[in-house]
Image (cartoon, rainbow, N blue to C red; front, side):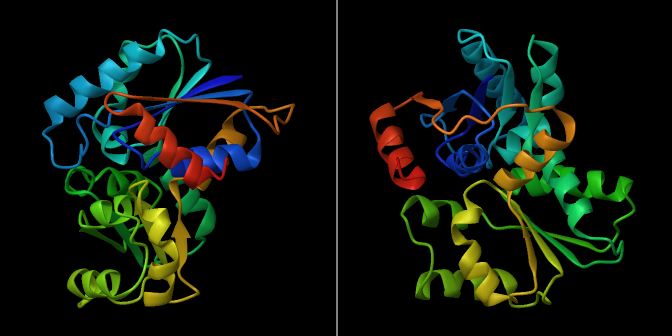
Length: 247
């Protein structure tokens, strides 16, 4: 199978890493809209327009499936994307909701949702989890995490200071939904700040769980073909990809 992975920038590479680990696809095409990142501060109309343009991009590659690794796009634009697409499109929000439901049997579990301003404003995770009878939900926009990750700051004094800024009044949750694909890169720091018993819901792992639950995979691909595309400075994206993915 050939799959397309779309993100507003480089964060979706964390999803690609999970796909590579589980060897589900023969070919992976990654497109990051690096010229217009971040999406998390943009309005819905703009997000939808950019998302539809991404669908048009992937129509050139005869893909079997498209994954929207961007939580903001998944929250606002999936229906519009599906209307103009001939291939299935899966978003990380629906996968994250499923993974959270699978991980927590107690419907009263204290769940903390982290994401960009746009993702949190959409209430997409709350809507999905409410339908599954989860009610103890707390959402917080933590957009400062994105530039830190892109500057490769994953722990240390700066991260701790920002954690104190965001989480001073936050009780230790049973689970944290990492509602931005950048956030898994600071998961160790988050785990240390809260508790080793706090469950972290990672978009990449959630996508793999969703795929394996909804599609049949009969073959493993230990050495898939991987291509990187970007709307600006693709060489920089490829360099980050090789570093993050250890390829």
